[in-house]
Image (cartoon, rainbow over all chains, first blue to last red; front, side, top):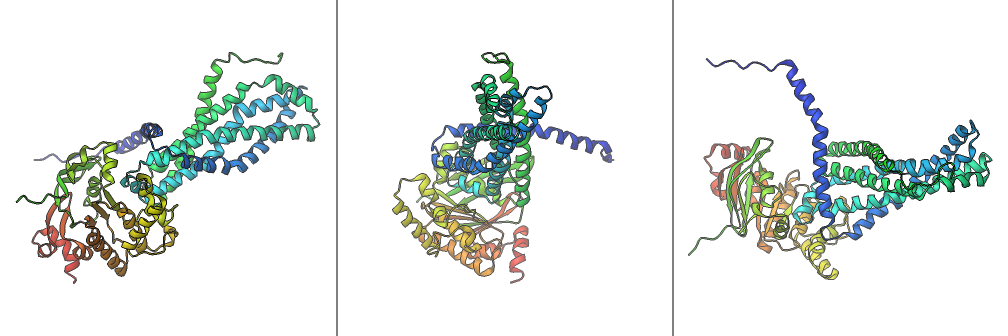
Length: 278
Length: 250
C-alpha cells in the first residue's frame, strides 16, 4: 500500500518563507552587480549617445538647481544658527565659519544633494524605465536592434555622476552664503571672524572629497533606480513598487556609501595642513 | 525540383522558467511570403515562442532557423544585425510615448542608416501610407486611437522593408470594426511588401481571416497545423475544443 504523504510540519513553510526573504537582499545585490557589469560594458560600446547624455544632464543638473539651491540656503542658515549657539557656550564664535564649511563640504552638501537627486531624479528614472518595461517599449528597442543599456541606462548614470557633484558645488556655495548672511547680518558676527578661520581650517581636499563622494553616490543611486525600473513587472502597480524600491534603495545606498567613503578618506589624513594652531 | 525552403523553421524547441516547462518540443515550418497564425489559449506559450523567433529568449534545447540563420547560436552583435531583417508589432503597439509618430517610425532609420533627413521623412510618409495613415507624423501616440497606434506600430516595423514581420496578438482588446481594419492591414502588408508574417493570437475569427497556415499550440506543443479549411474540420480534440468556442456559436 502506498504510504500516505504526511502534511508538511507547520513551522516548515514559515521557515522556507523566512529563508527566502532573508536571501532576497543577496539576490538583489547579485542582480544589481550583473546590471552594473552590463551598464559598464555598454559605456565603452558605440554608438556614444552624446545628445542623450546632455539631455539627461540638463534634466538632472539644470532641472534640480532651484530645489538644491533652496535646500542649500536653508541648511547653511540653520547650521549657522546652531553653530553660533553651540560655540557661544564656550566663547568660540571665531570657529563658526570654518565649522559650517567643513560640515557642508565634507558631509551635508554631498548627502543632502544626493537625497534631492534620489527624490527628484531617481524616482523619475525608475518610473520612466518601469513604464517603458511594462508597455514593452524596452522589448521594442531590442527588436529594432538597439541596446537598451546603451540607449537608456548609460546616458542616465553618466549624467548623474557629473550632475551630482555639480549640484553639490552649488549647495556648498549657497549654503555658505546663507550661513554668512545669518552669522554676519542677523547674529552680528564680524565678517573677518567668520572668514579668517575658514581660510586656515578648510582645505581644498575637504571640498574635493565631498565632490568625489557626490560623484560616486550619484552614479550608484541612479544605477539602482535604472535597475529597479528596468526590472519592473506587471502594470501600474509594478511601476509604483519599482519607484518605491528605487528611492528606498537609493537612500540606504547614500548612507552606506557615505560611511565607507568617509572611513577610507579619513584612514589616511596625510597631507592635511592647518589645525587650530595653523 | 527541390522543395521550397522555409523562411522560419523551429526544431524541437524546449523552454522552461523556474523548473516549469513552457515549450516542450515545438516543431514548425513557415514558408516565405505566407501568414502563419499560431493559435492558443492563455498560458500556452505563444509569446515565449515568438520571443525565441526574434532572439529575445534563448531556448533550453532546440533550434530556431530564420532565413538560413540559427538564431540560437548568435552572439549579441550578430543578433542585432539579424534583427534588422525583422519587424515586430506588439500587442499594445509599444510606441515610444515621448516621441511623435514620425519619430517613432523613423527611429530605426536614424539608428541604423545614414539616410538624409529628407529621405527619412519620405520613407516615413510612404510607410504610414501603406497602413492608410496620413498627416499624423506630428501627433503623439497618446493622441491616437488603439487601432491607429497598431497601424503606426506596423509602419515602424516595416520601415526598413524587413523580410519577416511578427505580430503579437494584434487584435486583442479591439472592437470588431478596428479588428477588421487591423486584419486588412496585415493582409495588405503581406500583399504589398511580400513579407512572411507570423501572428500569435487567440482570436479565432481573425486568425482564419488572415492566415494561410494555422498552428494550434497547446501546453507547449503544436498539436495540429494546416491550412484554415482543413483546420476548421479538425478531429484533434484540443483543436476541436478550442475552435468550438467560435465556430460552435457561428
